[in-house]
Image (cartoon, rainbow, N blue to C red; front, top):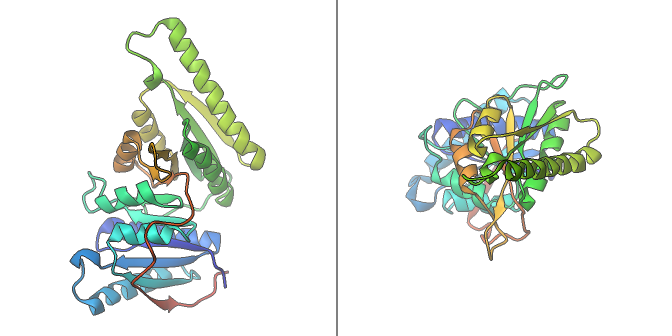
Length: 295
């Protein structure tokens, strides 16, 4: 019986359904248990029996679609974002739907991506079914930046590519570093510095994962546009979180928030997690719904 776990938030939105399916496939691939969390805080579900039926039906349905996955459901009296952040302390991944409005990053997804103590994956409606990689077909995109989270994002990208028999596309966008009146010399210096940063990130991860193919690209353009273009070519896009001054909790920057809102594939945010979440795992009800061992 494995102690590894992937946590996914459950609501009644279509993006939540996609997140559940995506998380179940990842749990199966990683030989991890799947924890399906439905939070009833804030009066979201006044009928506890109805909330339990919601989780029962969802877990049984996803177990039918992803045979062999081991899953159980949990009800929490916390706010949905707080519940998922609390569970992230003891999870390999926390997965959440983008939100009910496809054009807006929902508040739960935003808070979980910003504060999770483990990589947080945001999945939009229609992005739940993952391809099985073969000969590099599974593509993991990763944005290269200067934050500590960006270094961890590169490691996560290589690990994901290796697990899925895929490849990494590492991209550094650089013209956002230029000023409007930059001279040719300044532009050249900025490009050279970005190339060094890209090469350093890739070399460090490639040393740990020498069999993973990687394509390192330096692209001149706005970082958001470059990353959104990259997401259209990927099965998963991984971005590093950043640290807010005076706080060791991973936070979303403006660019990452925009990418999460409009990406064409699931997006993982990798921060600089610290053990010991601020929210206790209190008021949680758990019951096993599927006890088939993972193979």
